[in-house]
Image 1 (cartoon, rainbow, N blue to C red):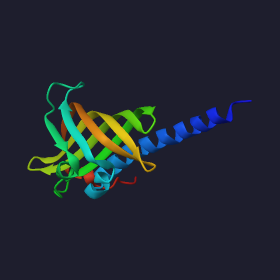
Image 2 (cartoon, rainbow, N blue to C red):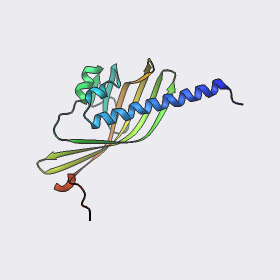
Image 3 (cartoon, rainbow, N blue to C red):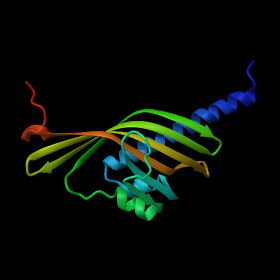
Image 4 (cartoon, helix red, strand yellow):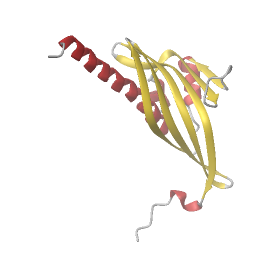
Length: 166
């Protein structure tokens, strides 16, 4: 028979991993819905957000935001008709008591209206996140976004039209 203490630790470990993954998913979902305050609620007050171009950390990120006020400005997107859609891939999570680290792959789509027509920008990203559990709630303490590459395509005028039934 398995040790009850070991089984309880395994169950707690599974629950913590699910909770961390849920924060990653909620951050993407709320971003897609332009819910800046909802996204911000997932970050610890002193959290850091940094953006890098490429696959690895370089000496300097292209942008860094520290604390709720700066992160809110970074997350707040103008209401300019752009549509956002994040597709999250695998997440690898390392737990260490009340802290965790996660790496998530993401393909993000942004559809914009431009003078040339509808522009679809697809970016391939990796999120390197750190978390802290505070009163049974996991919060992001840092997020490094690695923009690996992007693709831009102009779409036809019917890109937003409902499909035809034939």
